Length: 323
Image (cartoon, rainbow, N blue to C red; front, side, top):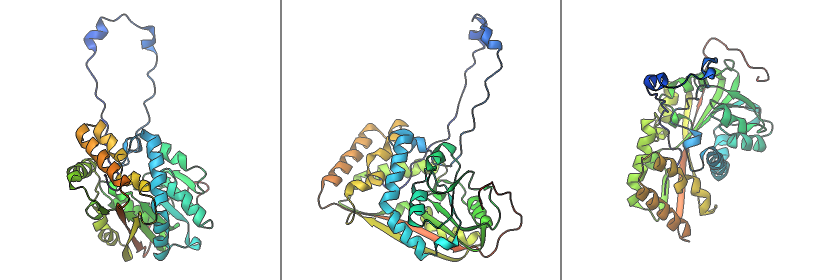
């Protein structure tokens, strides 16, 4: 079995070859004098997260995984967000790293009076949040085109674990929060991701490779233990941390496939990080687990919250339609 969000991607590098000699022997193509094609748009830098290389099936597979992940734990997460101060009247809520809108859509349905803004650095991924009940903004978490002191809440869900340095994103969250506004950060920690019975210690090396690959790409799968300190270092007050758990006591074991199934390992197999033997071992253990009527699993997540005591000076232009 595999565990919790999210495998990484190494930064793509394009290299060229010296074709001078070959070009000298090639008949001149009249099209060669045509103006060069415009450069390709830059690839969004989402840290260690690449939606097209996160699970089996590329982008389509990742969209399905995000939906399944949200469906699995949203009820527990929403209950905790409300306990930590979320109300429909306290918005707007800015969801940074909203991705495909899987959580945005559910928040809109559960709290229809809550004003929502969904932000993501990847325009292709965010396009799938159309119709989720939120204003959509393509932006970097560290450079939000939103007015200072304009938000009641900022939600970052499974975002900080992918950032080489979470501090700029947290500073921006504090800037756009009005005094008394709340930051809500949901994350995991690989050392206490949950429990499973039966356990398969032979998979420990595979889990370690998964974590090491994300770390090499700038991520941190153990960020859960640092959340409260990160919020305090950014100047938030009334900082609190709450755990939430999801188990197969109330959900089918197959619902945990986005976290425990071998699909998450497919990109690591393709990249050569895992061997075919390792991948087959993980798939076999997942199939054994899901076929065992007595198998039990609990996934553990953490939500940290803090209050913005004031707003840094200086405002920014607010895009049309976003208040």
